[in-house]
Length: 628
Image (cartoon, rainbow, N blue to C red):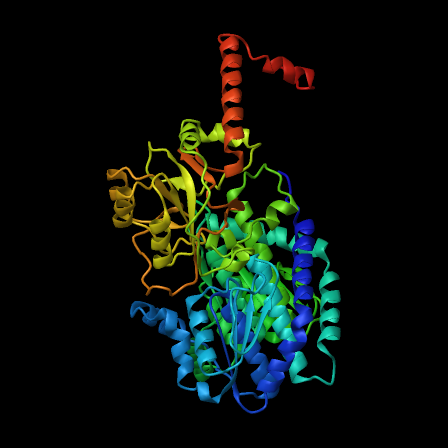
């Protein structure tokens, strides 16, 4: 079995995190100033979804524990959010929790890698209405969000996990600088942190990661349990929630046939109140958790000091239960003699330490997904592991219209475009997509995720583009489309809601429109097939968008990018059951000629070879293969 290159991957990943933090530093002083001014008497509130929740709560704990500043002690609970979602009010849950006290708030901190979360956007809008400054931490270049007051602090990368690590690191360092500006400026504090990050022993961490990956992958395959516990609480307990979230949701995300594992995290607030009421001992809570552990379960213990009583008792309880314990700690001796696999982290303060532990969780998430999806005999490279970003799986890579389409202007409707001749489009429609891709030099093909939802049909026509999922923008594109055109809806690849269905397709058919390509989801599949309307999309879902006209910015007939392929209005889209290709309108004639010549030559070559040996065995023998 080939050992995956954990050491090189660990070094590459931590280097990228460091580079993202460095990209954020030029605007760090502005962030420090916002945080420092807000500490003058008013309240500070913070909001984030998913992993960003742990990030902003760590900053709140830092502000409250080290300076006693008034903050929202806990964000909206899971129970409250679930209830709000059932009441169709989730997108305003954060804003509603803020609205009653916004007059007392000096600063709102929001974290959202995509910058597109409805909950976060509503909160930023509310702050703008009340002139409350916002410190918005986002992935990408930051153009997806514009608070009326305050700033956007962007990571410069659309990699979800690297962005989360950079955001937690930068926010932690900025908060420390705002609370104690005379001790060390942000620049010096950041350089010290980044030097320590660069000095992490990636060989030892890679070895720890390899063993942890094998254990976690085994647990997931065999439906055992994973425990993520922080005996000492504090910011490590918050990042422990994120650690558990990664193992439960993200490690198996997108892996066919693999179910999320059962992950047991630190005792909840309700559990802890009961524990302290009856037995005021932190170690008791961890021991109680591990009473349910079984042999071969995996236990991750996140600790400040491995010599602390709670950590020692936790390691002992995990060992007695026959589990496979993994200990991450900053101080104290190794516990390898007890059977625990441990890694000693560099000497960061408690809050900066949490940022590095979060990176370890993200490393483990990627290597576990690779272990679950890759042939055990296959060799993985660091590039393979770095490419296992969550963003494409969660539609987060393209963080805004402007980032996705940096040269275009939103809120513009272009009614006139240049199209190839109808005879050229007709000629392309008779050429297989595979042959067109060959004629384009293996370029122009869209992702295999965009599939023809109406089998047996061929889609071919000039592109009329609609940027964004807004319903009125899409209708405007239909209005300006001419017979034979293909409407291209650049909806960002989202899979949560559909933005096209049977009624719209039937209307487009009456106008002679050739078909539609949706970078997202569609619905009414049976109707689309019944009326034989060529439709390309990422998939189907019955849940569609529901918002008023003009709710989101968009544009008609501007260049758009889908799966890294630029589509300019008037380019020709051709789609069959092999996939979809974009033919630039100024290359149509050349592509037709080249494809015809290539198909003719290919047919003649195979006709000449009919019934004959292909000579492949002799070719391999000549190149050094052993023929047995």
